[in-house]
Length: 126
Image (tube, rainbow, N blue to C red; front, side):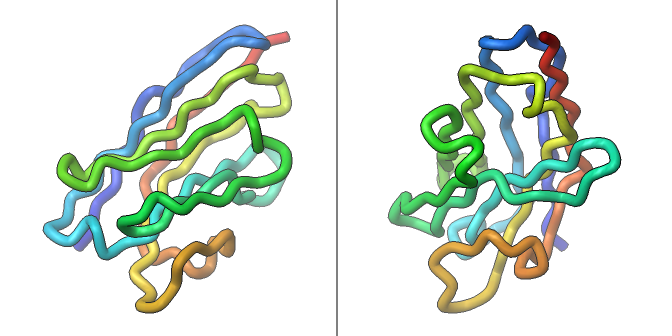
């Protein structure tokens, strides 16, 4: 069973930065497309960013493009989300997810992801 644990959330003022980390317990981390999603109170879970298995190809939601950066370190079984120029509307619980579908380069569809972490709260004050 693949386990994901997020960390790095917290309270930050608008314009500030946070770096989220996700530790993935698996012997085959390089086999997974990794994604970050978020869910604000009263809203559906939404795609934030994803990264391909080994060649660093990325995709972002329009609302975070240019402000957030996803990266991964396959030797450490880690995926990161660097968040800059944070806005109050970025407030949400952020989830890390892993997709094992063979042949998929990237996906923003949460239904494609097999494993999820429990989330970490990010709160941006105005």
